[in-house]
Length: 231
Image (tube, rainbow, N blue to C red; front, side, top):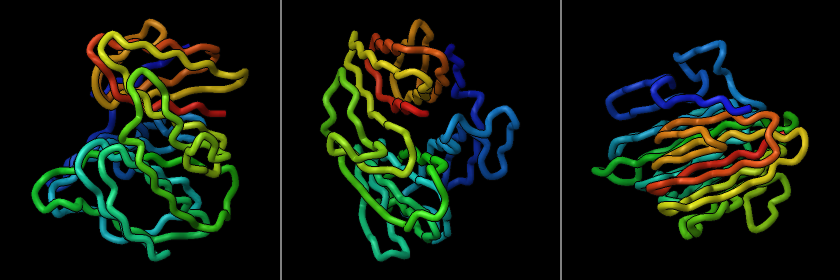
């Protein structure tokens, strides 16, 4: 069973310096039917103007993943990490018992476009930690494992039974992905066109997948997306 979450149905917040679309309930946007999917709680698609960003603020007991689509995002946190994320980079913050961080557009003039994702961890109270890795060279017509519970295949380890894949399809490209018994999936299309088991998705659309064993993904003009394989 597939249920499409259309881009235009997402929550929207425009603050001048920030343009944000919320797939699930977040901040001032609340929809009782859209409070997450499995362990997924937040998928925000953010565009931040040059020189602007999120000042230092705390988090606790979430796995926070950022994926930069274009531009550059500067990160600083209470553990002493300072880094600049560029297009194709994935950052994972395990907030655990507590962390404070800030995220700013590293360019004074050009915008940065990124997805921020929150996952509920497998348990509370993990020690806070940070990881960052580039997947900019992920090949087309394949799924590249970016995050996983065991850090396999050079992926970033996360504290939840979720496998996060970066998907890129060239024009006329296809990919298949098998789901084990009792597994679920969420697909978030960042850009392009995508057909998922016969359902058509446009840029910004998401899709919840239940009771399917095989995912068939195809694109006519090319696609860039994230695939979450969830328990």
